[in-house]
Length: 522
Image (tube, rainbow, N blue to C red; front, top):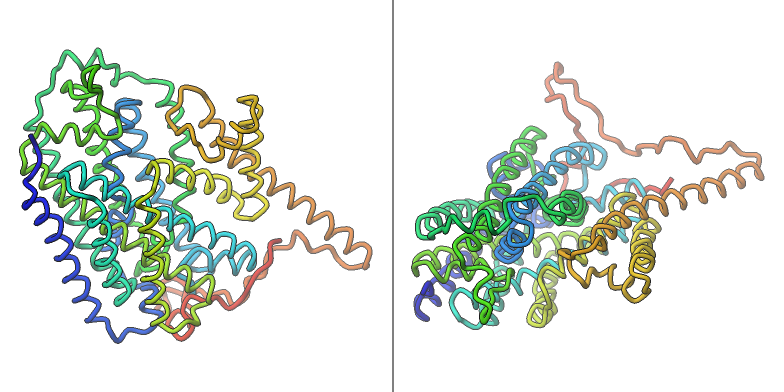
């Protein structure tokens, strides 16, 4: 039976947290005299390797031990490959768009600041609200996941674990801000990669595969769900990544565009490998005869990873336990730092004193813990966030986002012939892995509907502007190219520069993150 003793389990969990607390507070003490701008972000300070480790640590969490193995039992090898690629490849969008957005809005360090500069305050506040809600949901799901993981691996009560995690990360994040989160993520990212390798080798060596089950399981064959996920997962994960401010903070933190590309490409490779290894445990459990289990004691797909570990030696479970705590801590402090930076920048325009910001880190933990204790399915939380992002991101305007969700409702009502089921489809209450086309249709309706409503609003607004211009005898300028107010100047590489863009505002942290202009949509 693969479960460490009560004493060993407590030691592994709380010594790991204690180590991160010591490292985090030590780094925070080193940066105790940093400015407000340095507390919130770290523009143009990081090279490729730290960026790669940070993107890996921020992209994962202990929840991967539930979702990915479960998908393997449902969609087989095809599902594992699609999920791994869909989780890793969307990170490339930050390398592609980051340099462009940084040139347009060099003062900023989150996407919402560029949105304010380009589309105006209303669009920025809408995106900010969605980003903050998404980060909050991710924090809730991460705490809920780590509590369940520790309970399943050791039998310990998960409540003290998630409270301790909140206390540890809150202490060093509130004291040191972004720099501490970035530094600890370097350590945690490296630890996760090492522990994953050790765990994978141990599972491969210790687990006995019944080769006769490989063909009969059907998990090596393509299936309908696997083909549906080829579309659903890239759309859901790519659009949702835009809401996650901790990715944008790390994008703006890259020292050069080349560092950003190298760091993101390294992170993509790391994430794909890690997720493939974790997801493959679902396949291994099936081929080892552990899943679906005997008829009188069936094994649920969501806990198949832990059912597999029960067949392995205690030390393997210990390695996975430390890895889980590390994964969760790395993701959680990134969410905390990103939420505080986003709220300070978007809602208070970075005018708050740094001590009020630190207090905000502490206060936001109270509702997170309360909801995490009562949280329903972890996957359900992610799916709600994915649906909202799929409707919002394609056009990045309020009408498009709300219209996309309304289109999902219309599709569900027509498809199921029931308005109630149509409303439930917006929340994906039936889950992602259904036997029909409901979830697939929802993820088609959300972005397509968002685009249609967005272009409809564009047509209406341009029509009103045209009529007003004609009535006043003025030139119609609704389709003019937006004026780039305060756009940074290009530096000639032959004149001693690096061939990039510079702007004096980047070197000043007196008003960090604030662009010099506010735009209007169209």
